[in-house]
Amino acid sequence: MLGRMFIRCMAIALIVAQSSTTFAAGSSADPSTVTYTARDYTFDGPEKIAGGWTTVTILNRGKDLHQIQFIKLPEGKTARDFRAEMAANPTRLPRWAERRSGPNSVVPGEQALAIVYLEPGEYVLACGIPDSHGTPHVVHGMLKPLHVAAASPRPAEAPPADQSITLADFSFELSRPMTAGTRTIHVVNKGSQAHEVVLVKLAPGASVENFLDAFRPGVAFSPAGKPIGGLVGLDPGREGYFRAEFSPGKYGLICFLPGPTTRAPHFVQGMMLDFDVR
Ligand SMILES: [Cu+2]
Image (tube, rainbow, N blue to C red):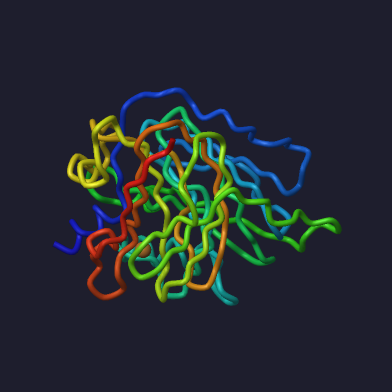
């Protein structure tokens, strides 16, 4: 039962082929911009970057859904410790793991972009999406150690945002109606638990509930919609940004993160939102 809940909480199903998002991934010469390529089951990309506001793109070149969760390791913990704890108990992050967001789930062939604040220190990149057996990709090796150095002398500033989303226990609040176009969205976690934003483009006539009903771990197609990014788990009191392209139609926001004791995904407690883009 707990395993099944966890599967629902980390997984997402997918979708209906559509054109790729077209926002610019940024110049590779800019130290505050970084791209990781996700495959089944690896991340290719830099192992050392500068701290501060960082624009992170995930290119999904695998056959399954993938995401990047930046996890800050506290003093005294290593990527090896993280790997060992995940292997011993794949159904939850180590208690000491600090969620620092990242670009959320995107379907094969597409990309997602987040702007995250990274303090200097040791991190791991991890993918929490489960395979068809419910085992998160991180346990299959989708885990990359990352060293974040001091910020460059001219660090990037937080980007201007078009819109904001406030995360609470257990809700999403949009600051204003969403309009079509490429949008940069500021996300603030005012809850007492970590939360995430899974952004879903819904099929015509479908709702978030339809999407969740149709969703199966490890299956990359759902008739009711597809994940197009958003922001991965963010600890309480923290903020981040993501960028996505919106066209007129129906969209949804979902939080799959589990409650610390119940292990039930937050959407069960109402943390999901249907909205229209005009
Ligand atoms: Cu949540």
